[in-house]
Structure formats: structure tokens, C-alpha cells
Image 1 (cartoon, rainbow, N blue to C red):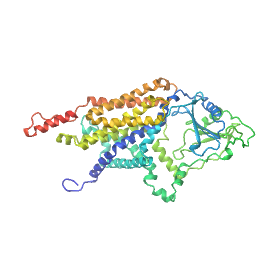
Image 2: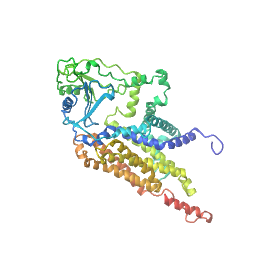
Image 3: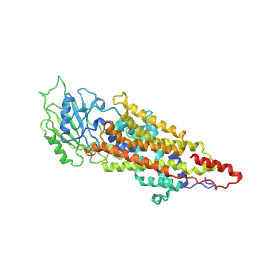
Image 4: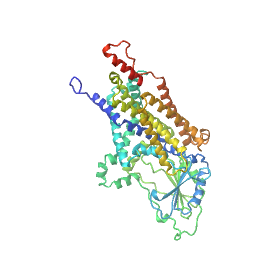
Length: 551
């Protein structure tokens, strides 16, 4: 209701909704956006946080040497699966299933192989990028179901904030081309508007797709109606589970029917055939069924899918394991509409379709979204500065928002950098090492939340941003000092998963350093109180000046 008694219009109502829906869960949404943006490079983070893999440089003989290694490591296995190195992976990830092992992932054994020699590598224990990815939608420090519910509700608030923001700003596209520096509140509003409009399609798609991915929890009624309450049937159709190896393909010691062992055909000609058919993606993985038997088969799988709808159904070539001759096989059935829809939504949200250039574009859009959330929370504080000047003090609610802004924005940067530092400073053989890395992350974040309580608002921002800039900037230096490959080594060898991480850390250091420079050169937002003040208001003027100095 307006002061004149008339009801508020749509835009005024949406402005109130936009402000409070963005603020109440803004700190959580910032963390979700920040960690989700980093998760676009989850595989690269995994590689960097295992420096034992940095000496693994792929070559033309990588596939053959990996298969030879599996002959030594798992000669009794019923299947071998080799995930080959690529732009986002520097070593060979091997898995196999022993006779009689349980079906599914629980029955698999795993190993990491050097791409150059085929030798087994024992990397340090770490959660790597998986922790940031899981934190993005499960929050970690609580049961998974609770975390997903909280993130789902926060995402709904985010979607409301985006739509209400579009309605509120009737000149939204004009405002995008408007920036008024050194204008206090107007500058923050311009920055918030510009970052919101710059990646608006990304913000809408990523938020909506996030809600759809959690719809089985947030909106389960459609699934329950169609599948008669059998959610397992829904998930089975979404996964499109591949049939497991049958007893016919298993190798039974003591009861096997094969007359004798059979060597595998050389894999190089098979790889060359696949490279001609798939010049863009090449071979992503190799699966050998019934290795060492006359019935062995070698399946080459393309490194990328043809479309988002059939993700997980990449093209394959099947060869006879003993002779190397190609076998005919029926074309796989098209995915059901349920699975196709799930594949598209999941692929769009996680960026699984993205080539390097598109992945960087998604990452930068995520950075813009993170800045949008941060500027919105800071704007809430800046808009209320005139009220605080009149009072001559900072109300408790305003001070609480200030503290949470510093701790959740700058503090999360410090905590993330500390997580990477803990990966290199903790002893490699420490028991439960991955858990200690995560504990270091939360301890650093907690300290950053407490730090603004004992420092002025401006000093807290300055000190935490400076610390984050230094920690990010020194990570590429720490890398070679703790067994990793330096930029001088990773770039010439084409190890872009490692080099890309170091370069991204330098970019984050530059971004935080720019904020430090801006804070150091910035002038107080408030104008000094008038020199001549009426006696009745002299005390208020003195209080206002003291308050401004404290900021």
C-alpha cells in the first residue's frame, strides 16, 4: 500500500518481492552459484589435485600400453574398461570386474594408469572437484536429502528473483548500456543490472533446469501418477541402464569352456579406423569383454555424443578380440522421450555437451551470475546508508547483513583457495585425507565469517579480498613445488587440464586483486557533515562524522 492509500502497482510489488527473495537466501545462492561455476571444470580440478598424475603424458601408444597393463593387473577379469586421456584428463582411468563380482558400480575395481608407460599410479586421496560439485546441490554438512531440499527451495527463490527483476526494470535493456561510475548507489545498481542482463538467458536456463533436475523431490506428483508410484521404474528409464555382462561372457576359472587363452589383436589399427569415422571426438573409451578368451570383443566408444538427447549412447565400434575384424551390430534403439528429456536438461545444466570454447563461455556466464548475486547483496546495504547516517548508528539487522556479505562472498573465495592449499600441504599418506581437506575448507570459511565481527566493514572486505588474491595467485607457484607440473611443463605437453587450472587461478587472483585496488582507491561514499551545525543538531553531526570514520 502506498502512502496515499492506493494499492501498489505491479512493478512496485515485484520490486519488494525481488529485494527480499534475493536477500533472504542470497548468501546460500551465492555459494551455490560460485561452486556450481567451478564445477564446469570438475575434471580439471580432479587432475590438478592429484599431482602424481602430472607426469602422465599421452602418446600414440597409450591405448596399447594400457591394455598390456590390464593383462598384468587383472588377467582374470571378465571385462576391462579404459577411459582414455583427452583434453580434460591426463591419465588412463581403468576399471574391471572379477568373476562373481556384484553387478553395478559396487562390483568394479579401479586403477589409474600412466598414459606414457602403462604403469599403475597411486594418487593421493582427495575429493577433488567432486566436493565442490556435490556442495553445489547437497551442501555436504547435512543429510543429502535435506541439502537437496534446501538448495531446491533456494533455487525457487532465485527463479522468482530473476523473473521479478525483469518485471521491475521496465528499461532493463537501456540500463544494460548505462554505467555511472563513482555514483555510490547508482553505480552498484548499474553493475547489478548489467550483470543480470548480460547473461539473462543463462540465468533463466540454469535456474529452471536446476529445478527440473530436482523435480522428483520438489514436484513428484507427475512421476507418481504416470509410474503408479514406482519411482524406481522412472529412474530405470531415465538411466537407460545398459545390460550387464552375462554368464556367457564371464570367465569361470575351473569350469570355463574355452580350450585355451587367446591374445588380443593389436589395438592401433582399430584406433585408426575409429579416428577416420570420428575425426572430431576420437575414441573416448575402450571396453574389452571376456579378455583372454576366444570370445573376446573390443568395443571402442566415441569421446562425445551426437546430440544431447542421446547422451550416454555415443557411437561405438565392435571388433573381434582375437582377429581385430569389425563385427556388425544392430543400431541402438532411440532413447525414450523420458530419457531424452532428462538427457537434454541434464546436459544443458552440467555443460556436458560443451566443447572447450563453449565450456569457457558457460564458466564466464557463471562468473557473471556470481557477480550479479554479490552486487545485489551489497546493493541492499548501500541503499540503506542514508538511513544509517540519519540515525548516526548501524542497526543490528544492517550490521548482520554486512557481516554475512563479507563472510559469504570474500570468505567463500578464501575457503576455496584454502581447500586447494590443503590438498598440497597435508601429508599424502594421511588417513581420511579427503575429509581433512574438506574440514580445512569449512574451518577457513568459519574464520572468515567471524573476522568481520572484529573489523570495520571496509577493512574486513579489504583484508579478505587481499588474502584470497594472494592465495589464488600463489597456487601456480605451489603446484611445481609440491610435485605438480608447472605451466612451463604442462603447456608444451598439451596438458590443458592442468595448465587451465593454473591459468584460471591467476585470473581469479587478478579479479580479487582488482577489488582490492578498487577498495584502496575508493573514497568514502558519505559526504562530510556541514561545518556549521545548529546547536540542537550538533550532537547528531558529531555522531555522523564518527560513524563515517568507523566505516
